Amino acid sequence: MRRCRGGVPSDHSASRARQLFRLMEMPVPTDLPARRQPAQISRLGPIVVFSIVPSLISLLLIHYPAFANAFVLLGQMS
Amino acid sequence: MSATSTTTSAPIHNSTRWVQLGLGIICMASVANLQYGWTLFVLPIQHQWGWSKAEIQIAFSIFILLETWLVPFEGLIVDRIGPRWMVLAGGVATFLAWFVDSRATTLGMLYLGGAIAGFAGGAVYGTCVGNALKWFPDKRGLCGGLTAAGFGAGAAITIAPIRSMIETSGYQHTFLVFAIIYGVIIVVVANFLRAPAAEDLPAVSTIKVAQGTRDVPPQEAVRSPIFWIMYLMFFLVAAGGLMSAAQLAPIAKERGIADATVIIFGFSMPAIVAALTAHNVTNGVGRPLNGWISDHIGRANMMGIAFAIEAVCLAAFGFFGTTPMSFIVTDALVFLFWGDIFSLFAATVGDAFGRQYVTVNYGIMYTAKGVASLLVPLGNVLTQWTGSWHAVYAVGCGMNVAAALLGFFVLKPVIAARLTLPGQSTSAENAYPDEEVPRRRAVGS
Image 1 (tube, rainbow over the protein chains, first blue to last red):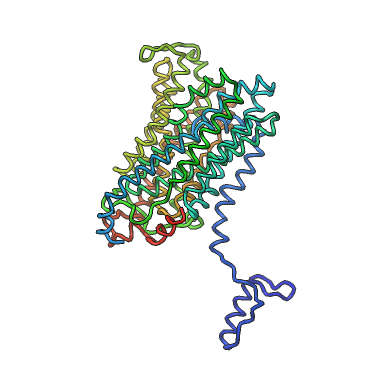
Image 2 (image 1 turned 180 degrees about the vertical axis):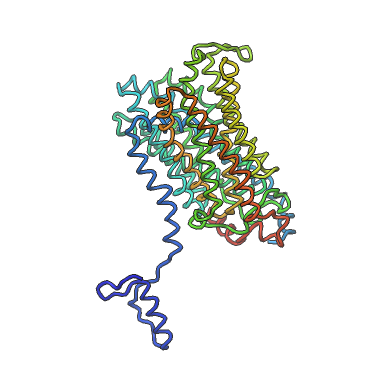
């Protein structure tokens, strides 16, 4: 569970707070943090893991001739 | 969507989708020389500026890396906005890449050109393969393979004029002229590309291979066992082939083939050149051919058969490729069953995870070839360690056997358990889930 930082509830506790306000049939305050959209955030997960991170690692490996030659071979064959 | 409506729409989609496939192949052919034409420019660049070959080839490595690794990222965008804008951006980047190369006076500029070219290549490749998979749920193997093969075929057509122009007008002028030609072709053709709407799809009854019942987003696809089985198989076959190919030149030298001459169809040529030419042809032909067979006998069956034959061919190359002609033939056979990874896995990703996210899902699968390339230096270490390239071929052979066994005994049961033949579905909706999604996407594409 996420902690509240500086008195501002995290999205998780904000969600619970919304539920409590609704249960008590009180108007929900507008200054609660916006709901997270887990689907949109996690959709980028595979892109980071399979695209961005390996790009950076490979660009570092380019300086080693063995890997540079391997990448050239990959280009000639694929 | 009802079965009736899909059946009546068949005459409309048939011409449209083949046109879309043709447009995709034109784009692929136009972007291909960023990859295959590069080798023609290396020596002229070296003569002009005095940089070492290794320094110049770093630009090509940057190109290959970005082309490979950025495909998932580009696929994510394509699945949201459609193919037109991504291919258009790829066309502009194709122009920019070779324009920068034509003006490059420093290695940094050359590397910048390589990076832009990497984006362009990945954008066009990933989008066009993905679009073929979307338009042809009944012929994914054939059409994914044709699109992938178009990449090599396009290069073959224009290698001669590029070589000629470099000799007559210099490499910088050639870069500029072909930057304009390729850029204009891709930008123009991109405007006619679109993703299929629901009514463009073929009759469900024409699909002969098992399909998933819904469109699976990438974050869900990468958590499924079928994805990782395929990723492992892709990696094993790609790595086995790459490690073996890296040993071609030393093997040819050791066997005295490097200096031998052969006569093929009345033409005399060095055996090593004949071997490279033959394996480039079979590497391209194998993609649609094996993909087409997989459309009829099932993906897992075809993968099992192809990778088993590939293992046999690698062994045959190791044992029997001792004369120039047997070297050429066995090497060509190895690549006939290696290139098909680019059609078989693309098609299977489309079958398993549906159309809506197929570009990004296949883009992620495609990165297995990049991971495989990281294993090539290990092959060289193995050769040095054992003092012979035999160990590399044994490992490559073993990798293909493992992939074949995975195909027959792991992937096939998983496909049988998780995917269904559209004809066995209770309704046509199972074959084309989320009908409204492609309608919306077609508008934006």
